[in-house]
Length: 515
Image 1 (cartoon, helix red, strand yellow):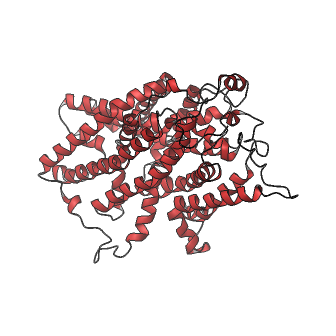
Image 2 (image 1 turned 135 degrees about the vertical axis):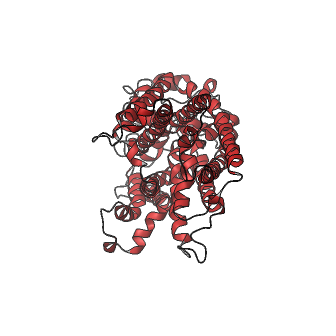
């Protein structure tokens, strides 16, 4: 099926749909989205990113950068630049979702094979499970801290030896977790409704908090006047670039997950313009604005309370009005809930469903995501701000960067935006490759991940840095860029070599010519 890249959308005929309903790769949740279900316009995508960006992790994101030595504007600029960079693969990967109406795991079948697509989908899903747990912990912790204002005994509990947190904290976490699962049960339209409510709510709440901090402190305080530790004469003079590049990679890693699975949302777009412009308007500026609010309010707390408070929940618990506390709790819960569902449930639910489309529904996939999120003990993932950036964000960006490079190379360069839509759901079609696996894609994936592996092992103290060359260790700081670039080139070279005629056994069966 030949589809011009400027076409609005591709659709399956009634005959194709009837034939594919018997395929093990087809289900209602993974089927292409039809015209009547395409309701996301420019405003919906802008709201999506405003909603997901305006959250507590974004508020606190600059804290790790400032703690590492940056001044406030260097931290905000690094965050903004990282989001401008990640916006590029975001918009590119969204193109296939909009044109063909397919979710992320089905999109992966074109490059990785009908069975091989489960590998990148599961890698993406496991990262999402970690993020789901982190956001659920943040929401539950917000409930716990605000309840502790009304019930002071909750604040003095003894941490469990098994969990590392108090049982009251754990129960609040489970309460918020349950609310997440309820929204998943209600489906995608409930999620869109929640995002549209949350977007203006969190921006208004953030600006009100900013206004309060400015008035109470008579300005924004010492953090905004604090010099960079990298300036001449300062403790880390001349070391800016050695900190900037890993920090930039970490900022890209913050949304590297969504840069892959954005087809899960763009499949509902009315046009390419809606998804591209909506994302461009909603992502980089909101991330920079909400990070600035976090920096400014935190700076003001140094003057107001005599010490620095990075957690916005703790700031809100200092308010004496019960009405303010209740409104703040509801607003924060809605905010964290909307971000968590959109960013960390939609994709893994589809990814787990792709394992067995006939048996695993979107709802069941969402439940699996939630259970794995609990088992990962998310409160330990974000306990250390340094580990949060250098072990969590950078580590998985080095894994997801190569996947992004392969997908974009396959779709835009090798296939030139032309996919056999029906073939994506056929077990014995042209995307079967070698027993359902694309050897070319997996070689490219391994080649993309390997250069960052030594640095990661050094970072987590499983390998002595003296046993690895400094160059290999340094590559870890650029893991997303290195992995993306190597996998992009390796995939195209492998595809070219495997398509050359000759008696030798090729890596993959050549794709059938488009009809």
